[in-house]
Image (cartoon, rainbow, N blue to C red; front, side):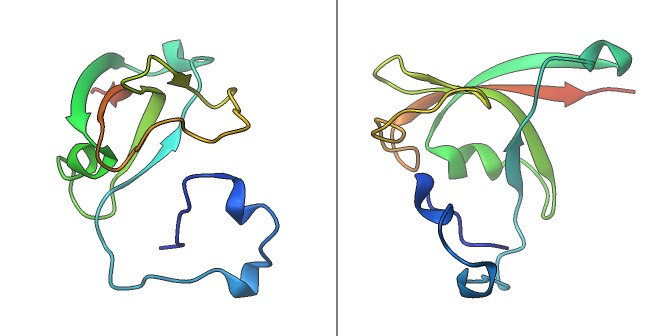
Length: 106
């Protein structure tokens, strides 16, 4: 797994300098988009967790959760389209966050 820094710190780092954490085999996440979701059976789920790791611990190793938005305790909403000069504006690893994600169904 590539080391994920929760700001724009990875933008200027050459790929050969990014730290690999091979011992981590847990779940991860990526931002998804609402476009084309109607092509797949799904439901939108909203949950609240104390940090992103609390959310990811609900999934099996290697699973990638499709997140539509993350809302912090300050009300700031992050999606794949948002970008803030000061980063998250809250502690994504510990604060109570709202996570809107896609559960694909059969």
